[in-house]
Each structure stands twice: as structure tokens, then as C-alpha cells.
Length: 227
Ligand SMILES: C[S@@+](CC[C@H](N)C(=O)[O-])C[C@H]1O[C@@H](n2cnc3c(N)ncnc32)[C@H](O)[C@@H]1O
Image 1 (tube, rainbow, N blue to C red):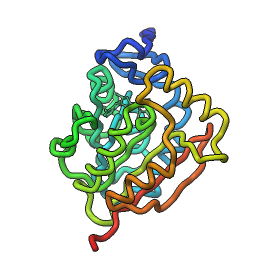
Image 2: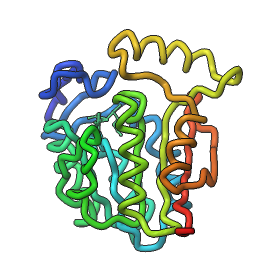
Image 3: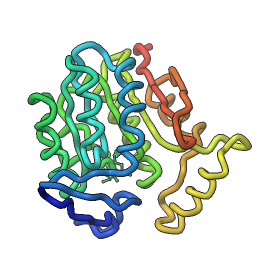
Image 4: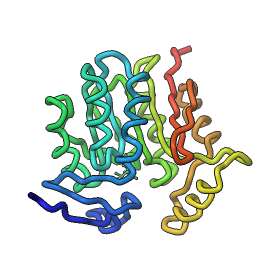
């Protein structure tokens, strides 16, 4: 029996840590402790949001485990994973065999690039889980602008992660914000109002906001009809 090797994601191919956890690996498949905790509730949310037969584009797919969980819940969808980190893309490719050919070869999409969506292919829905607090704010702005370029009216963007909501912010999220900023001043738990404003400007309405375990939120934005 193979023994999974252990690696900390603070020494990735990129100069910056890409996740804040220790991940085991087995035959190229990285295993994320946080994805083990949240992939089932997230896949459950996605199952009710994604359009029928959707081609889904995921940003910052990490290990690739969310793609598998979502595809197993929804046998009609196809999934395009992506990540700027090469080791994460290898893991996504290794996990893809769990989904009957419905998970494509990962793309190297880096949303610091304003034209990132030009290399993304067609998409009916966008998914972005635990990325916008571990990347500069410009990534959120480019996410909204790229989603507007890629999606038809009515197309959904699903965001999952922690948010600041003024007085209502969970103490654990304030502490997480401080910890993120100490690692990188460009990171941080985003204010929900700022994220809503950026998507509004790009032509999206916030359709739903659902509380998730550990003070995270599931947000669904929906592209408006052109006026
Ligand atoms: C905390 S991990 C989350 C991974 C996965 N979505 C999950 O929830 O298990 C953050 C991910 O964001 C990706 N990321 C960081 N900066 C990015 C950028 N500029 N563009 C796209 N993805 C980025 C990282 O490479 C990493 O895979």
C-alpha cells in the first residue's frame, strides 16, 4: 500500500504560498484538509445552482477535489479546472480520472492578468472557492470583468469563502484577516459590500447569500440582461 507523502504548500513552484495548510499527496493527487471538510456542502450548493449540462469554469481549483465532488453530484455537467500553480494543475489532472472524462486538462489561468479570460474557452458558469482572500484585490476585479466577458445573461458566478460584514463579522474572520495580511499585505478577508459593488459594476446582481460552516459564505451572482 502506498503511503501518502506530506507537503506544506508554503514551498510551491511560485514564490508565494498558495494555500495555508499541509496537504498529503498520493500519486500526484494532493489532498486538501479544508476541501475534505467543505467539498460536500459546496457540491450540494452547486448542484442547485449550475445550469443543466453546464460547462463550468473554475478559477484557482487547487487540488482539484471540488471539481470531482461537483461532477459526481451532477452527471450532466463538464468542468474546466485552472490554477496558476503548476503543482496544483498536476493534482487537478490526476484527480480528473474520477469523473468519466468530464474534467478537462487544467488551464494556467492567473487572474492578475486583465485578459485572462481570452484563454479560458466557453463557460456557462464560473466557480471560485477560497481564492479572493489569498490573492490581491485586482484578482477580484478581474474575476468580475472576465465573468462578464465570458457568461451569457443569466449565467451564475459562485463564490465561496470568508467575508467581512461590518459589525456582524465573525471574530474568527477578523483574526484570519490579520493573519493573511501579516503574510502578504495584498491579501485579506474581503468586505462583502466591496465584492458586491465590483460585481454590480460588471453587470451582476447578488442573487443569494448563504451561511456555510466555519463562518464562510456561499454567494451566487447572476449576470443581468444588457440594458
Ligand atoms: C486556498 S487555495 C484554494 C484552492 C481550492 N479552490 C480549494 O478551495 O480547495 C487558493 C488557490 O488560489 C489560487 N490563486 C492564487 N492567486 C491566483 C490568481 N492570481 N489567479 C488565479 N488563482 C489564484 C492558488 O494557486 C490556490 O490554488
